[in-house]
Image 1: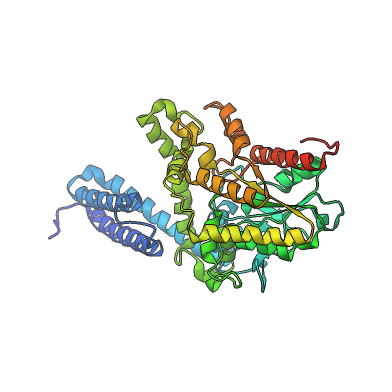
Image 2 (image 1 turned 120 degrees about the vertical axis):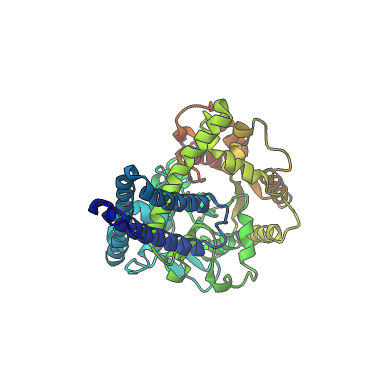
Length: 468
């Protein structure tokens, strides 16, 4: 029962604090329940976010209750509730505003979650869906944007050429090509501007290379894009880019003669395919708010990991390679099995390219890329990768397979390792051969690949050409 002797100001607090507590508590609880339902399978009950939310709600309720007994808490608790309620209203208004005017959504948030733009669908279609392998590619003369938070040094947007690939306009029709390059995102040089792809660097050195690489392609699609587009070009050499691990994408193609079930592809091109279909959006409710929360978590994750690392191992945590420890450790757990179906399918794709190229009088050379998790292994863990490391085993297998079939191999592992070995543990992250967040080659990495390719092409042609 209320005390009639209590002053009006105290009665005001008695009314406002419970009202705000009910509004804030129920709003936050409803939002996070909907969020966690959207993330089913990706988030666990003991997840840090879940525990933090429960702790926050408990503290909010506890101090709201205590403010009734302790008058000196009332003003602070009420101000806390008002600020919390104001923040909720802000995001509710933002949700409505950006639903109506998605073109005003900050670019950073769109990159984090492209489904923010689904609601109006005013974006041009970015993809060509084909009736034959490779079944999907980028449209010609179209601005392509990579989605996801990939870091400040990653270039998200570039323009396709008249065939839908990453080359200068009109390049496909020029005579005198030295090679055509096929493969996935490492061949496309994802994240690099057109003038800094390894193909462009080799071209500027006097050996024109046409880029048919497409992010997210499986080996089967690599063979398909060569058959459909590469055979239109009179180049003496076919450079087949092989990224260790991309053979797993073969599991998405149970029937090599048909596209994958439900037209779901892999890698970067699938993230853009998702962008075109609202039903595949991760967050069905409060997309803007969820994206802001995700962006905030990703922004503070790296500093928190570095801080925790400095507490555990202060000296090693100072290294510019330390932020990649988790990637290195996770990759080291992957096990190699030669008899897996995806490796057999990958070898079949290589042979399919060789068969067509041989009929056309072309030479196939396999370009073996190096992943960041292998390149930084010794810098992070202090010793070389063991022989049974997945990437080492795959490289050995694919190299031996190619030699048996007279397919030349350009293996970048040695060049990448020599470059990384020369780097000290401190310094500018831009000196590393991979992007700071994204795992693809930056300019330094593309230059290493270009030098290896150029060395091979010079060895075959032996003309007096320039260097990079």
